[in-house]
Length: 285
Image (cartoon, rainbow, N blue to C red; front, side, top):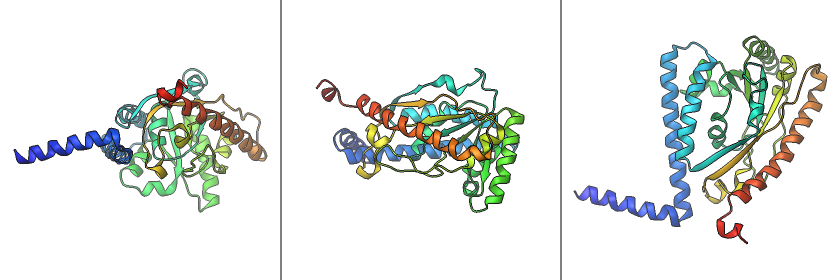
């Protein structure tokens, strides 16, 4: 009985602190995020057992869709709006090769993107992720391609194989061209890696840029200020950028074109999200 009273008191204190003490709210939401990450890993482990290590890009779509919806609710995001969702299915059926490129800021990105990627899609990621328990096995069985950044010849060969694979199986590929988390406090992008662009050119498939607003600017998350307010978020999918007829000599100009489009959109979208998440009292002013 005594333990129950103590637990009730702690719960009551944390509940009040959640609404009135920002740093408490931050750590509670971060804790919920980590808990749900482990929950997703458990789901991935179940898929690993069921699949018996047979690579099938469809296997990953179920867990991505189901758990991302659950994750979205408990992580404090009321609504995630996708502007330009029609561009996710270039032919209306999702049965064509395509390279999706999105800006990468933090682990929250996985929550954002997993909820709307087409079913027939795989992930292009760095080889080091293959060594991560559960995550590495999950990426492997869902047909992901791993790039060895330290070995340029291996990376080039992998791109050729990946290009043939997505064309043959009519798959889309998801990639973060920055190569790592940016962690910027303002709407900026890191320099883009060329790998994804070489892949798109070799496969002669379109690039579909996806822009996620800068979290601190949007007012939904800022680790430097220990702020995690959540709220509404609008993500923008840009029109496909064709690569038909392009060669490796066009990769640099293609990279610059896509990066400029994404950076311009990122700045506009981040401000739009900031205004969208303003308190009602400030909106009326």
